[in-house]
Image (cartoon, rainbow, N blue to C red; front, side, top):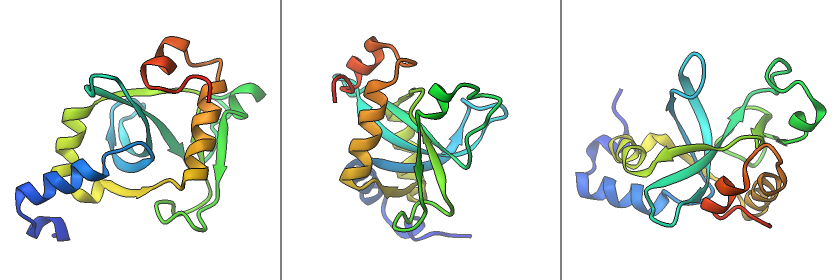
Length: 153
């Protein structure tokens, strides 16, 4: 099935991808960080100084008690109701216990090829809550937090 982006010129797609590839953007695409690899919703939470990589957190349908066994790990998940968040189909949980680092150029190219990967943007309040939770997470090293501007929020 064709999408609206199939009818846009390549330079217009790249421009849309560039403008929307920012902190707080919500993407949905295939990731290899899970076992098995699958389509995931993720939130861009920061960029490195050289703009070579970005940090993201995953949105999960539920908190997996086998992966997140302790209350400390479970408390690093923010519950997001779907109401008012068009990028969600149901209540979900933002996992702020770990950061995934991604190459900007490859993901940006994927977005330019399929604008449907861009599925929304966090509100300023949601973004601040996510970044504040990441900042306080002892499961993420200070080096990684500093690299992506996530220290001391």
